[in-house]
Image (cartoon, rainbow over all chains, first blue to last red; front, side, top):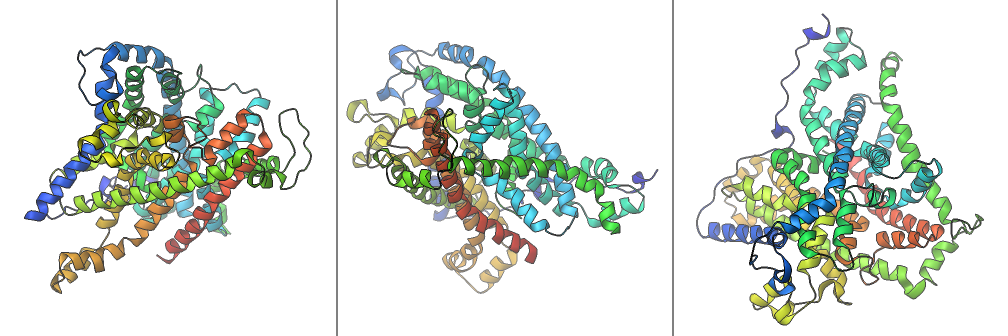
Length: 297
Length: 297
């Protein structure tokens, strides 16, 4: 009975990550302009999505450049079937990539973030800036030797290699997200109290910190899941159409000599579904993740 | 000393990540730099020291000035993309900031494109920006025709003069929502007292924004510019999936890949390092600046 005597604070709400202030509702002629603009933008944003959907249900002569905006003459699922058959293996492979990446990177990020948010060691700023820069490097600058290492060691191209690579290059962003999260949500007294109770660092982390880290985890999991799912650059360097993730398969489907446009559109939708589902379900945290990925505060 | 002993486990938690980053970020960058100053032209070639020859050749006797052409392309793309995304992002945030019913809905939809992979959005934009005009006009051209804006019709990414600017359209579509999210957070971060004080002084809405609110957004705008600029330099998958590896729309990030396909590692490495330097010029001062800000806070 040592650590339990410390009462953990309730998990912080989402608002900690994305402050939301209820705006004042305006009226008058300004409101008309405001809503008109909001609607125009809504239409612009949704137009490509509309074209994706209608084209994916078209067949034969229906699929013409000049008729991109029109609804299908006859609705058919043929292109969806074709796209699904082409993408299915890669679709499941990409889960095998994105799920482990999301979990492993988040755990690494939580551990690093906790240590870095509490430990002021000499040169901490320099070390931290060096870590952060890892987030911004163009991966082309490491790709040539990376591929040489992979080939020399005889590591087969494909999902396992990509999991490793995404976990390594995900360290900076996950560390940053958790460091900022802990710095703003975990009071110093809580750590002190745990120390007084005789809990070591690892124990404090496991018993006290991890349980209140859920919002942080949601952010890094969404972030790493979507970036691993959507990645194309690592995929093209370190895998191929037979063992690569879905972006490679989609590109093969859509980039053929004479691409089947309806199937390409269906394929693009299939490819986007998991990330869109994640975004719609966890959208509030998604925004938090975007912020944490860019602004240090 | 007592503190240091206490943080022993902290060092234990942190060191694997630090070692991985040291090797896979800084070690591999050093490796790429070494390749870039070698005379290794293919996998079987010698590995002598070539000095800066690979770099100077890029600017002097590159085929058709391909590298300088790709740099010009990058510049055009970056400028159009930054201006477009900042403009729309700020406008959307401004509208939502003024208080709109169903704000959450608009915010969710505006952020939609961000969740989709560049490869998937490339598929639909390649289709929408079909170069045809007149009766067989593609999606974007027929919308412009329908709105009576025929003079804006373009052959998009196949246009030698406007191809690179056109390539920014999908990028703007995809990332304006992100800029909006940043600015919304910026708006929400402005202390309510400032607005109230301005209202007490009888400031008009115009003056309120002009003199109080917009100046407060400068740090957000700076972050957004830096992040977008950095994304722009690394942009690979979107351009690849809209136009393919075309000379017309080639940027350094793609030229690296094209060079690697010819097994000219030294040249590819030199382009990568130049790309890295371009990113570093933008990012490093920003990291140092934000670090200093944080310390002062």
